[in-house]
Image 1 (spheres, helix red, strand yellow):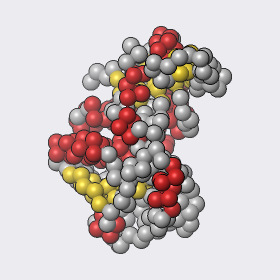
Image 2 (cartoon, one colour):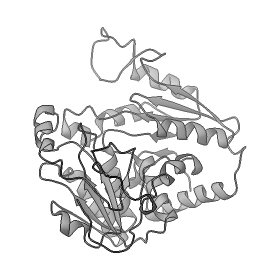
Image 3 (cartoon, helix red, strand yellow):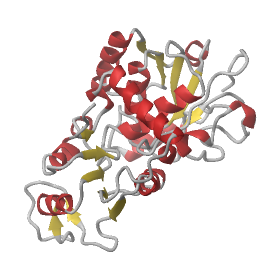
Length: 333
């Protein structure tokens, strides 16, 4: 399989994804410490990172390669990302000049650029990231864009494989509270991953937090091809009944996108959407009193530490956390 760019899991068939994961599994069993000797990976983080940044650097080191990290404005010149603006602000350079130069210094480039969070249509179209991608003539990796996080989704798939979740399982992506509105990238990538894997996918969210139609339509198309399904609901009891996987994730209100005050008002009335004493999956450390509530879930039920490790162990697969369902029993919110 020839792979020049990794920008969206939707660019691949389920068979191609499984081929990538088979390669990751082989590298875990049979390390190749010189596979990328002499190769350089450039990492451009326009927004903060912990696991994605560390896992890519660790992966390159374990394969014998090296990497450099650019965080514009922190030790390097700030980069202007908007097109058609006068260069008389705080940014010393523009991405139209900076990205091609950085790409010339490496064999592959990864870029992280979060959503601006103001214009839903522009963020769903991933306009900013696509403009940057057009400037790069080297293999390119999406390290998270406005509407996608394919590396995390790929590692989530591997986690589901590793913990033995069957492909026809019921997979519930549930919205949960968070102190602030988070981007749509992870939930959008997650619902597509689960659909492409062939799951019975249920997006559980309160009113005002429906995922964009373009995201859902793309996931439904993937599900049809894989023999699965994608539905959405605000009925927590119905959604969780019979679930094999519960994946808890927050995202901002799409009904009030870009309006921080209205978003905060809406989420303030939804603090009861916490997952309590139930198997769950989550993409980052849990805030006490937030996604899971103040009580702790029994540790044997949740494969909490396994997924982040796959970012490095998969050698090229940064991700989230997922768990199979334990003994049957009604979930408690």
